[in-house]
Image (cartoon, rainbow, N blue to C red; front, side, top):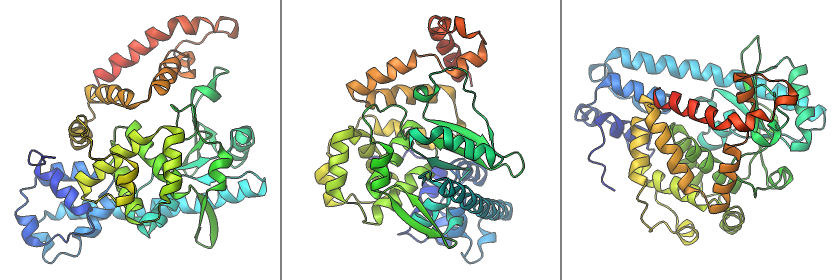
Length: 381
Protein backbone atom coordinates (compact mmCIF):
# COMPACT_ATOMS: atom_id res chain seq x y z
CA UNK A 1 0.00 0.00 0.00
CA UNK A 2 1.29 3.44 -0.92
CA UNK A 3 2.13 5.49 2.17
CA UNK A 4 3.92 8.43 0.52
CA UNK A 5 0.84 10.62 0.78
CA UNK A 6 0.76 10.45 4.57
CA UNK A 7 1.69 13.58 6.49
CA UNK A 8 5.15 13.89 8.05
CA UNK A 9 3.54 14.00 11.48
CA UNK A 10 1.63 10.74 10.95
CA UNK A 11 4.66 8.91 9.55
CA UNK A 12 6.88 10.07 12.41
CA UNK A 13 4.28 9.05 15.00
CA UNK A 14 4.14 5.55 13.50
CA UNK A 15 7.94 5.43 13.59
CA UNK A 16 7.89 6.23 17.31
CA UNK A 17 5.40 3.41 17.96
CA UNK A 18 7.59 0.69 16.46
CA UNK A 19 9.76 -1.36 18.80
CA UNK A 20 12.05 -2.54 16.01
CA UNK A 21 13.30 0.95 15.05
CA UNK A 22 15.41 3.37 17.03
CA UNK A 23 14.73 7.05 16.46
CA UNK A 24 17.90 9.17 16.38
CA UNK A 25 18.70 12.86 15.91
CA UNK A 26 19.18 12.52 12.15
CA UNK A 27 15.79 10.87 11.78
CA UNK A 28 14.12 13.68 13.71
CA UNK A 29 16.00 16.40 11.83
CA UNK A 30 14.91 14.99 8.46
CA UNK A 31 11.31 14.32 9.48
CA UNK A 32 9.95 17.76 8.58
CA UNK A 33 7.46 17.53 11.44
CA UNK A 34 5.12 20.33 12.48
CA UNK A 35 5.44 19.78 16.22
CA UNK A 36 2.10 21.35 17.09
CA UNK A 37 0.24 19.02 14.72
CA UNK A 38 2.33 16.06 15.87
CA UNK A 39 1.50 16.73 19.50
CA UNK A 40 -2.23 17.02 18.74
CA UNK A 41 -2.12 13.74 16.84
CA UNK A 42 -0.23 11.87 19.56
CA UNK A 43 -2.64 13.13 22.21
CA UNK A 44 -5.70 12.20 20.16
CA UNK A 45 -4.49 8.64 19.57
CA UNK A 46 -3.57 8.25 23.27
CA UNK A 47 -0.03 7.06 22.49
CA UNK A 48 1.89 9.86 24.20
CA UNK A 49 3.37 7.54 26.85
CA UNK A 50 5.05 5.33 24.24
CA UNK A 51 6.17 8.36 22.22
CA UNK A 52 7.65 10.10 25.27
CA UNK A 53 9.63 7.02 26.31
CA UNK A 54 10.90 6.72 22.75
CA UNK A 55 12.12 10.29 22.53
CA UNK A 56 13.23 11.22 26.03
CA UNK A 57 16.67 9.57 25.94
CA UNK A 58 17.85 11.02 22.63
CA UNK A 59 20.98 13.13 23.10
CA UNK A 60 20.50 16.90 22.80
CA UNK A 61 16.82 16.37 22.19
CA UNK A 62 15.92 19.89 23.26
CA UNK A 63 17.97 21.26 20.35
CA UNK A 64 15.87 19.32 17.84
CA UNK A 65 12.40 19.16 19.35
CA UNK A 66 10.91 22.29 20.95
CA UNK A 67 11.26 22.08 24.72
CA UNK A 68 7.56 22.83 25.21
CA UNK A 69 6.72 19.68 23.23
CA UNK A 70 8.95 17.51 25.43
CA UNK A 71 7.57 19.16 28.55
CA UNK A 72 4.00 18.48 27.42
CA UNK A 73 4.75 14.84 26.63
CA UNK A 74 6.42 14.40 30.02
CA UNK A 75 3.47 16.06 31.74
CA UNK A 76 1.03 13.73 29.98
CA UNK A 77 3.18 10.69 30.76
CA UNK A 78 3.32 11.58 34.47
CA UNK A 79 -0.39 12.34 34.64
CA UNK A 80 -1.19 9.01 32.98
CA UNK A 81 1.10 7.12 35.37
CA UNK A 82 -0.84 8.53 38.33
CA UNK A 83 -4.14 7.78 36.57
CA UNK A 84 -3.15 4.17 35.96
CA UNK A 85 -2.08 3.78 39.59
CA UNK A 86 -5.48 5.11 40.64
CA UNK A 87 -7.27 2.72 38.27
CA UNK A 88 -5.14 -0.19 39.53
CA UNK A 89 -6.03 0.58 43.12
CA UNK A 90 -9.73 0.92 42.33
CA UNK A 91 -9.65 -2.24 40.23
CA UNK A 92 -8.37 -4.06 43.30
CA UNK A 93 -11.18 -2.69 45.47
CA UNK A 94 -13.91 -3.52 42.95
CA UNK A 95 -12.66 -7.01 42.10
CA UNK A 96 -12.41 -7.85 45.80
CA UNK A 97 -16.01 -6.73 46.32
CA UNK A 98 -17.20 -8.90 43.44
CA UNK A 99 -15.24 -11.87 44.79
CA UNK A 100 -16.76 -11.40 48.25
CA UNK A 101 -20.21 -11.49 46.64
CA UNK A 102 -19.39 -14.61 44.54
CA UNK A 103 -19.82 -12.78 41.22
CA UNK A 104 -17.32 -13.92 38.55
CA UNK A 105 -15.68 -10.89 36.93
CA UNK A 106 -13.45 -10.42 33.89
CA UNK A 107 -11.43 -7.22 33.44
CA UNK A 108 -11.42 -6.30 29.75
CA UNK A 109 -8.73 -3.63 29.34
CA UNK A 110 -7.19 -1.01 31.62
CA UNK A 111 -4.20 -1.83 33.88
CA UNK A 112 -4.49 -5.58 33.21
CA UNK A 113 -3.95 -5.05 29.49
CA UNK A 114 -1.13 -2.59 30.17
CA UNK A 115 0.79 -5.15 32.25
CA UNK A 116 -0.01 -8.07 29.94
CA UNK A 117 0.94 -6.41 26.64
CA UNK A 118 3.36 -3.65 27.63
CA UNK A 119 4.87 -4.92 30.88
CA UNK A 120 4.19 -1.65 32.71
CA UNK A 121 0.96 0.16 33.60
CA UNK A 122 2.48 3.53 32.67
CA UNK A 123 3.03 2.57 29.01
CA UNK A 124 -0.66 2.38 28.12
CA UNK A 125 -3.42 4.93 28.69
CA UNK A 126 -6.90 4.20 30.05
CA UNK A 127 -9.70 6.52 30.99
CA UNK A 128 -11.87 3.95 32.79
CA UNK A 129 -12.29 0.35 33.90
CA UNK A 130 -14.16 -2.06 31.65
CA UNK A 131 -15.70 -4.96 33.57
CA UNK A 132 -17.48 -7.98 32.12
CA UNK A 133 -20.04 -10.11 33.99
CA UNK A 134 -22.66 -12.73 33.24
CA UNK A 135 -26.00 -11.25 32.19
CA UNK A 136 -27.55 -13.28 35.01
CA UNK A 137 -25.44 -11.29 37.48
CA UNK A 138 -26.09 -7.84 36.05
CA UNK A 139 -28.50 -6.67 38.76
CA UNK A 140 -26.27 -7.98 41.54
CA UNK A 141 -23.28 -6.32 39.87
CA UNK A 142 -25.05 -2.97 39.67
CA UNK A 143 -25.91 -3.24 43.37
CA UNK A 144 -22.25 -3.89 44.23
CA UNK A 145 -21.12 -0.79 42.35
CA UNK A 146 -23.86 1.36 43.89
CA UNK A 147 -22.99 0.09 47.37
CA UNK A 148 -19.34 0.92 46.70
CA UNK A 149 -20.34 4.54 46.09
CA UNK A 150 -20.67 4.65 42.31
CA UNK A 151 -23.47 6.52 40.56
CA UNK A 152 -25.04 5.32 37.33
CA UNK A 153 -24.52 7.68 34.38
CA UNK A 154 -26.89 5.94 31.96
CA UNK A 155 -30.66 6.02 32.18
CA UNK A 156 -32.77 2.86 32.04
CA UNK A 157 -35.98 4.53 30.90
CA UNK A 158 -37.28 1.69 28.71
CA UNK A 159 -37.63 -1.98 29.62
CA UNK A 160 -35.53 -3.12 26.65
CA UNK A 161 -32.24 -1.67 27.92
CA UNK A 162 -30.77 -5.12 28.54
CA UNK A 163 -31.04 -6.11 24.86
CA UNK A 164 -30.78 -2.61 23.40
CA UNK A 165 -27.29 -1.94 24.74
CA UNK A 166 -24.34 -3.98 26.00
CA UNK A 167 -23.01 -1.97 28.94
CA UNK A 168 -23.86 0.65 31.54
CA UNK A 169 -21.60 3.47 32.70
CA UNK A 170 -20.87 4.41 36.31
CA UNK A 171 -18.77 7.15 37.92
CA UNK A 172 -17.60 7.69 41.48
CA UNK A 173 -18.52 11.19 42.75
CA UNK A 174 -15.42 11.47 44.97
CA UNK A 175 -12.40 10.10 43.06
CA UNK A 176 -14.16 10.28 39.65
CA UNK A 177 -13.14 6.83 38.43
CA UNK A 178 -15.39 5.69 35.58
CA UNK A 179 -16.54 2.11 35.09
CA UNK A 180 -18.27 0.44 32.16
CA UNK A 181 -20.15 -2.68 33.23
CA UNK A 182 -20.54 -5.06 30.26
CA UNK A 183 -22.80 -8.08 29.93
CA UNK A 184 -22.03 -8.46 26.20
CA UNK A 185 -18.80 -7.67 24.40
CA UNK A 186 -20.35 -6.85 21.06
CA UNK A 187 -23.66 -5.02 20.60
CA UNK A 188 -24.05 -6.22 17.01
CA UNK A 189 -23.46 -9.97 17.19
CA UNK A 190 -26.39 -12.26 17.89
CA UNK A 191 -24.40 -15.50 17.88
CA UNK A 192 -21.88 -14.85 20.62
CA UNK A 193 -20.23 -16.90 23.36
CA UNK A 194 -21.84 -16.95 26.75
CA UNK A 195 -20.02 -15.41 29.68
CA UNK A 196 -19.16 -18.90 30.95
CA UNK A 197 -17.52 -19.68 27.59
CA UNK A 198 -15.24 -16.70 28.12
CA UNK A 199 -14.78 -17.58 31.79
CA UNK A 200 -13.66 -21.12 31.00
CA UNK A 201 -11.02 -19.77 28.58
CA UNK A 202 -9.89 -16.89 30.79
CA UNK A 203 -6.33 -15.86 31.60
CA UNK A 204 -5.16 -14.67 34.98
CA UNK A 205 -2.50 -12.22 36.03
CA UNK A 206 -1.13 -10.94 39.34
CA UNK A 207 -0.89 -7.17 39.74
CA UNK A 208 0.25 -5.70 43.07
CA UNK A 209 -0.14 -9.13 44.74
CA UNK A 210 -3.77 -9.52 43.66
CA UNK A 211 -5.08 -11.93 41.02
CA UNK A 212 -7.25 -10.66 38.17
CA UNK A 213 -8.96 -12.48 35.32
CA UNK A 214 -8.98 -11.29 31.72
CA UNK A 215 -9.98 -12.71 28.35
CA UNK A 216 -8.15 -15.65 26.82
CA UNK A 217 -5.74 -14.62 24.06
CA UNK A 218 -7.99 -15.69 21.18
CA UNK A 219 -11.07 -14.04 22.69
CA UNK A 220 -9.00 -10.93 23.38
CA UNK A 221 -7.92 -10.72 19.73
CA UNK A 222 -11.52 -11.02 18.52
CA UNK A 223 -12.77 -8.50 21.07
CA UNK A 224 -10.07 -5.90 20.38
CA UNK A 225 -10.50 -6.28 16.61
CA UNK A 226 -14.25 -5.81 16.72
CA UNK A 227 -14.01 -2.97 19.24
CA UNK A 228 -11.45 -1.07 17.16
CA UNK A 229 -13.36 -1.57 13.93
CA UNK A 230 -16.67 -0.54 15.51
CA UNK A 231 -15.09 2.72 16.66
CA UNK A 232 -13.35 3.39 13.35
CA UNK A 233 -9.90 2.87 14.86
CA UNK A 234 -10.23 6.41 16.16
CA UNK A 235 -7.42 5.62 18.63
CA UNK A 236 -4.21 4.02 17.40
CA UNK A 237 -3.83 2.74 20.95
CA UNK A 238 -6.29 -0.06 20.11
CA UNK A 239 -4.25 -1.16 17.10
CA UNK A 240 -1.12 -1.05 19.25
CA UNK A 241 -2.79 -3.53 21.64
CA UNK A 242 -3.49 -5.94 18.79
CA UNK A 243 0.02 -5.57 17.40
CA UNK A 244 1.50 -6.39 20.83
CA UNK A 245 -0.83 -9.35 21.27
CA UNK A 246 0.13 -10.82 17.89
CA UNK A 247 3.85 -10.29 18.50
CA UNK A 248 3.62 -12.22 21.77
CA UNK A 249 3.09 -15.45 19.76
CA UNK A 250 0.59 -16.69 22.32
CA UNK A 251 -2.41 -17.42 20.06
CA UNK A 252 -3.86 -20.93 19.90
CA UNK A 253 -4.62 -21.01 16.17
CA UNK A 254 -6.93 -24.03 16.24
CA UNK A 255 -9.07 -22.36 18.88
CA UNK A 256 -8.95 -19.07 16.95
CA UNK A 257 -10.09 -20.76 13.76
CA UNK A 258 -13.05 -22.37 15.51
CA UNK A 259 -14.11 -19.05 17.02
CA UNK A 260 -13.83 -17.22 13.71
CA UNK A 261 -16.03 -19.74 11.95
CA UNK A 262 -18.58 -19.95 14.74
CA UNK A 263 -19.05 -16.24 15.40
CA UNK A 264 -18.35 -14.88 11.89
CA UNK A 265 -15.94 -12.11 12.87
CA UNK A 266 -13.12 -12.92 10.42
CA UNK A 267 -13.61 -9.57 8.65
CA UNK A 268 -12.81 -7.63 11.83
CA UNK A 269 -9.66 -9.62 12.61
CA UNK A 270 -8.52 -9.44 9.00
CA UNK A 271 -8.83 -5.66 9.02
CA UNK A 272 -6.93 -5.40 12.30
CA UNK A 273 -4.07 -7.60 11.06
CA UNK A 274 -3.75 -5.72 7.76
CA UNK A 275 -3.77 -2.35 9.52
CA UNK A 276 -1.13 -3.58 11.95
CA UNK A 277 0.97 -4.71 8.99
CA UNK A 278 0.71 -1.50 6.97
CA UNK A 279 0.97 0.96 9.87
CA UNK A 280 3.15 -0.82 12.44
CA UNK A 281 5.10 -3.12 10.05
CA UNK A 282 4.20 -6.31 11.88
CA UNK A 283 4.42 -9.41 9.70
CA UNK A 284 1.43 -11.79 9.91
CA UNK A 285 2.47 -15.27 10.99
CA UNK A 286 2.19 -18.25 8.67
CA UNK A 287 -0.53 -19.69 10.90
CA UNK A 288 -2.60 -16.50 10.72
CA UNK A 289 -2.24 -16.38 6.93
CA UNK A 290 -3.58 -19.94 6.67
CA UNK A 291 -6.69 -19.05 8.67
CA UNK A 292 -7.45 -15.59 7.24
CA UNK A 293 -7.19 -14.75 3.48
CA UNK A 294 -4.92 -11.72 3.88
CA UNK A 295 -3.82 -11.60 0.24
CA UNK A 296 -7.30 -10.72 -0.90
CA UNK A 297 -7.36 -7.00 -1.67
CA UNK A 298 -9.31 -4.75 0.63
CA UNK A 299 -10.52 -1.74 -1.36
CA UNK A 300 -11.68 0.02 1.81
CA UNK A 301 -8.38 -0.28 3.69
CA UNK A 302 -6.90 2.95 2.33
CA UNK A 303 -10.02 4.83 3.42
CA UNK A 304 -9.71 3.35 6.89
CA UNK A 305 -6.05 4.41 7.11
CA UNK A 306 -6.96 7.89 5.88
CA UNK A 307 -9.60 8.07 8.58
CA UNK A 308 -7.09 6.97 11.25
CA UNK A 309 -4.66 9.69 10.18
CA UNK A 310 -7.27 12.45 10.07
CA UNK A 311 -9.42 11.25 12.94
CA UNK A 312 -8.16 13.84 15.40
CA UNK A 313 -10.20 16.39 13.41
CA UNK A 314 -13.29 14.37 14.48
CA UNK A 315 -15.45 15.47 11.58
CA UNK A 316 -19.05 14.33 11.53
CA UNK A 317 -18.88 13.31 7.87
CA UNK A 318 -15.99 10.92 8.59
CA UNK A 319 -18.00 9.36 11.40
CA UNK A 320 -20.95 8.78 9.08
CA UNK A 321 -18.68 7.30 6.40
CA UNK A 322 -17.24 4.86 8.91
CA UNK A 323 -20.67 3.82 10.14
CA UNK A 324 -21.54 2.87 6.57
CA UNK A 325 -18.25 1.04 6.07
CA UNK A 326 -18.68 -0.85 9.34
CA UNK A 327 -22.16 -1.88 8.21
CA UNK A 328 -20.74 -3.20 4.92
CA UNK A 329 -18.27 -5.36 6.86
CA UNK A 330 -21.07 -7.25 8.59
CA UNK A 331 -22.44 -10.60 7.51
CA UNK A 332 -26.03 -10.75 6.24
CA UNK A 333 -27.44 -11.92 9.58
CA UNK A 334 -25.46 -9.24 11.41
CA UNK A 335 -26.86 -6.58 9.07
CA UNK A 336 -30.40 -7.77 9.74
CA UNK A 337 -29.82 -7.63 13.48
CA UNK A 338 -28.19 -4.20 13.21
CA UNK A 339 -31.11 -2.76 11.20
CA UNK A 340 -33.64 -4.24 13.61
CA UNK A 341 -31.84 -2.66 16.56
CA UNK A 342 -31.52 0.59 14.63
CA UNK A 343 -35.30 0.95 14.57
CA UNK A 344 -35.80 -0.24 18.13
CA UNK A 345 -36.37 2.62 20.62
CA UNK A 346 -33.71 3.29 23.23
CA UNK A 347 -33.55 5.08 26.56
CA UNK A 348 -31.91 8.01 24.75
CA UNK A 349 -35.18 8.50 22.86
CA UNK A 350 -37.12 8.45 26.12
CA UNK A 351 -34.78 11.05 27.62
CA UNK A 352 -35.31 13.34 24.62
CA UNK A 353 -39.10 13.01 24.83
CA UNK A 354 -40.35 11.62 28.17
CA UNK A 355 -43.66 9.76 27.87
CA UNK A 356 -45.65 7.77 30.38
CA UNK A 357 -45.37 3.98 30.12
CA UNK A 358 -48.76 3.57 28.48
CA UNK A 359 -47.57 5.66 25.54
CA UNK A 360 -44.19 4.00 25.04
CA UNK A 361 -45.40 2.46 21.76
CA UNK A 362 -45.14 5.94 20.25
CA UNK A 363 -41.34 5.67 20.43
CA UNK A 364 -41.47 3.08 17.62
CA UNK A 365 -43.24 5.62 15.43
CA UNK A 366 -40.85 8.42 16.34
CA UNK A 367 -37.66 6.37 16.11
CA UNK A 368 -36.88 7.34 12.45
CA UNK A 369 -37.13 11.03 13.37
CA UNK A 370 -34.76 10.58 16.30
CA UNK A 371 -32.30 8.81 13.99
CA UNK A 372 -32.42 11.60 11.42
CA UNK A 373 -31.97 14.23 14.11
CA UNK A 374 -28.86 12.50 15.51
CA UNK A 375 -27.51 11.98 11.98
CA UNK A 376 -27.85 15.69 11.23
CA UNK A 377 -26.11 16.59 14.48
CA UNK A 378 -23.21 14.26 13.73
CA UNK A 379 -22.89 15.55 10.16
CA UNK A 380 -22.65 19.15 11.35
CA UNK A 381 -20.27 18.37 14.24
